[in-house]
Every structure is written in structure tokens, then in C-alpha cells.
Amino acid sequence: MAVSDVFTALSEDRPYRKGMEKDKVLEIIKSMVEDNKLDDRIVAILIDNYDQINLLRKGAQENAVKEYQELF
Image (cartoon, rainbow, N blue to C red; front, side, top):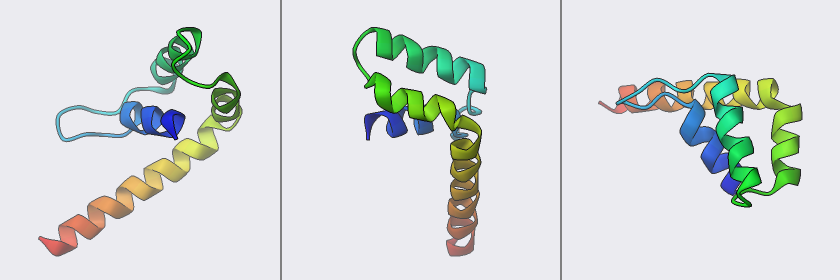
């Protein structure tokens, strides 16, 4: 859960900033592995599947924005 939370927090657009690029996201996540803050096995899965996972994340973010806009 921690890896997905960090990945999402770094990569998705927020009202106050754009999401980070892949290289920067992976740099930060790898640093957190070195500091024993994230599980290296889970991070390896993220790295191996980054583009596919990020595409799914983007789709979910776009859907959330659309739903929010429909409410207001």
C-alpha cells in the first residue's frame, strides 16, 4: 500500500503542482528503498510495470476529475 500511495502522490497532478516525470518519481522511490522506507520487492514490480500502472493511474485521475465536475 505504501508504494502505491507514494507513487500516486508523486506522479499525479495536484491542484498546486503538476505530477512528476517518470525519472524523478523513480529516483525518489529508489531512494526510499535505500532508506528502508519502501519494500524493494514491491518497488521492483512497479519499476517493471511502470508505464502500464501509470496509464491506469492517469485514467483513474481523469475519471475522478470528470465525476467531480459533473457534481459541481
